[in-house]
Image (tube, rainbow, N blue to C red; front, side):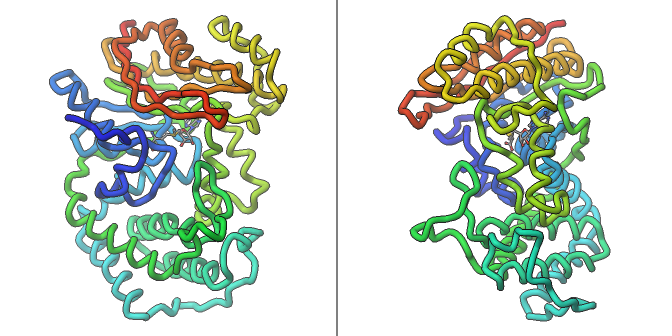
Length: 402
Ligand SMILES: C[S@@+](CC[C@H](N)C(=O)[O-])C[C@H]1O[C@@H](n2cnc3c(N)ncnc32)[C@H](O)[C@@H]1O
């Protein structure tokens, strides 16, 4: 199967049934996963693990091929997205009554029958999050949330909450441009009408459940939230994943509106705690809690260069800790994967103050210490850092023999 030039990004998923429900710019496309699984056709593969589950692209594609998917994910909202797109879809396909309820919610909504059973006056504040919305929009969002809370069927409720979560950014004053930030006046994609966005999203979801829901074959199984803590042994035949990039995005801050709507955080002060649970990948999560002094031998030269020319002393610390954390991940992967299994990793390199960090080379060297052999490598696309240095996104394919 051939793939498009943007297969390493989320963009092709925007038109793919179910994959399109929640746009996760940090993810890759189902195309990429499909191509890798096609290439493994005929191999003895039944179980797939994504240690960095994200929006569940690997997991949904695997489920649609009848492979049993497992995942880890430290962001509780993303974990909800994964379970909703797979397990709740399977629930609805097995229960005509649930699908009828979902349709009934949409019909009532479209016909303007929108009074909640126990109408409550909506507050003027939302623990600080109201500042991201026009007043009318945040009240409509809270009104919809209250209405969804009245739905008794848990699968229908979760699907409706995903529909509402997925319109939170376009309905807000914010925009995703790499990171989530306030939109400039010239950027028109913000502050779109809540009710129109919600009804369109719900129609899309219902269409996808009808047309593609029956293709979702295997439920997804959550393992430890932090993939460095998984306990299982010799369970997995194939891993397809994209770890956080060194100095990449802040996955928690970028989903703060969704985390708030789904009651995972109360205020923005709760975000750093979630952020510190993930791999150390950004300068702001170099904290006492997750800081190690060990600099792995494979990274020592790079850390020395960074110490000489970094404008911020946290940069060498972040890099040393990133590779330390990733080394722990590879150690756990060796434990959970079977001998002869496949490990496919999408990764990009980085630069700091003109010092190039070949993340893919360093990670490959670490993998080799855990008995993974690099079999092949693809250049997915070239990127450019802010200072113009040419960077890359690559796909590395390993085989484990233990
Ligand atoms: C690049 S994204 C993965 C995107 C995914 N491949 C997709 O297509 O949707 C990396 C994900 O890893 C998660 N993460 C970071 N540290 C983690 C850890 N220690 N264990 C599990 N997940 C983690 C982040 O929350 C983020 O969702």
